[in-house]
Amino acid sequence: MPLVNVLVNNHAYTVACDEGEEEHLRELARFLDGRVRQLVESVGQVGDARLLLMAGLVIADELSETVGRLDELKKELSSLKTASKEGEISQRSEDELADALEKATRQIEDIAARLARA
Image 1 (cartoon, rainbow, N blue to C red):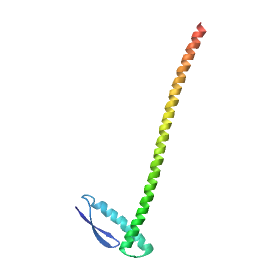
Image 2: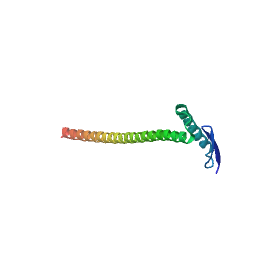
Image 3: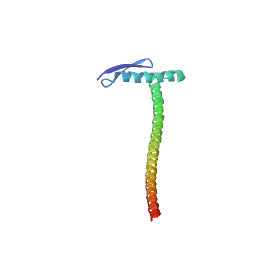
Image 4: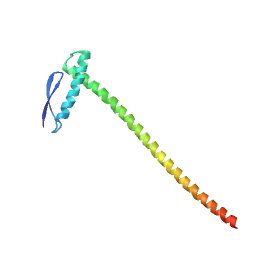
């Protein structure tokens, strides 16, 4: 299992990860470090544990909002798909109705022609 050294708030941490995940872990650490640095700018150095907790909470809040928005978008997509299917059903029903109307028209014209000959 590979070990990766990452730097967060100027402190080095060694973290284990799965084979092939090293660069992804480094990217995540850079992201976390960026959030911690933003917090340091606004609240100052209040200790690594507190900064990491605050950064984790900020990220968790953003993730929660994103998941909520994703759920809304999934519902909207499902609604659009349902409306589209209903539209297709309606279009299909209209096509079937038009075919039936044309067939009925031909039958009426045939009957009218027979009556005219009689």
